[in-house]
Amino acid sequence: MGKYDLNPRLIERPPLYPRRHEDRISGALQRLQTGEWTRLEGAPDTEAALQAYHGGGEIWYVASGTAAIQSLLLGHGIGPGDEVITTAYTWGATVSAVLSVGAIPVFADILPDVPLLDPESVRENITPNTKAILAVHLFGFPCDMRSLRGVADEAGLFLFEDGSQSHGATLNGKRVGRFGHGAAFSCMALKPLAGTEGGYAVFEDSTAAERAYLHGKHPRGLNPDRLAQWEDSRYLDALQLAMRPCAIGAELVKAGLASLDEENAARRENARYLRGLLADLPGVDLDPEPDSSAPVYHLLSIRLDPDRIAPEEALIRLQDTGLGAFLYIPTPLHQLPRMNWAAYDGPPVFWHAYLRESGIDYQAQSLPNTEARSRETFQLGWNWIEPNPVAMQQIRNVLGLL
Ligand SMILES: Cc1ncc(COP(=O)(O)O)c(C=O)c1O
Image (cartoon, rainbow, N blue to C red; front, side, top):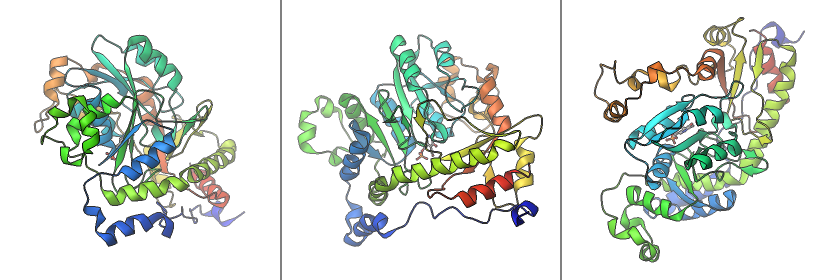
């Protein structure tokens, strides 16, 4: 019996993340040394590199993933009273971005086996006020974009992707980000494509991109030739939400593209190896990979047999093992107190005016798969960006404690 079987602890550590190799940081250093980080023209080189990576689209590199989602919504004219169907099993910013433009998040359920929107549930939630579907490729797993596109097209809706955890994930060999009318990605420091803080939007329609600029770009930051061609440019004024990106972070993102696919492949390889090792551990399961996909594994989600152990209990047992397990979404978003405008008695929340007007009642809603996932899973950070079978064996041994 090896020492990990007697006293399971994670001895191996994930590589430093994000990578800090010389070739990764030289562009950022140069910006600092030359003072070019003070320039306000945005990040055209990074946008060009992202456009090449995504095989087209109009890219706008902005301050955050949240700003990228806001820009998609604003650019497509989505605002007060418009309903956006999305998931309650996501990072809160997906939904706060919707609330921030006055739109109403409507929650469809997720599928039973993966943390991704169920296209049938999306269809059932369409009303005359629905304007868009916002699909989230959570934990690096791509949603079923073909079915979602079918639902969107049938009802004449926009389809957007929140790819903040899934840069480089593919479906049928095509990278996420260009399956709908637009996509948003976060590039904050822990994401698969990491800057300092930052994010970017991918637009398929240049008019929508320009309308987004109206809200988030100062006229001084726009190229005069481009302005001359833009029909609505006379409306551009000083009333901007600051979506301006950090030039240093943009350099890190541009450099990070060079190793993104390789890092993603290692994340995947490690997860698949661990999946094999877990086969003999009953009641501890990884989500199945969606059909025809190459997921990214931003986080690794572990599902526990609810008859055996609750995640909170599992985390207590695992706390001294070095595994770094946590509950990523302990409460699905539709159950958060600040969504419950009717019973809320805390400090004022601006979006309640819109929710009250729409009459939506999140408390009355039941999302069985979403709620079950919050009760039955916990997550691990998954920055295993180099293949490491030894670490996977140690993780297996630690999970054997459950
Ligand atoms: C799914 C998802 N959407 C949106 C965001 C918001 O991105 P940011 O924090 O860069 O605003 C994040 C991450 O933080 C995220 O994970």
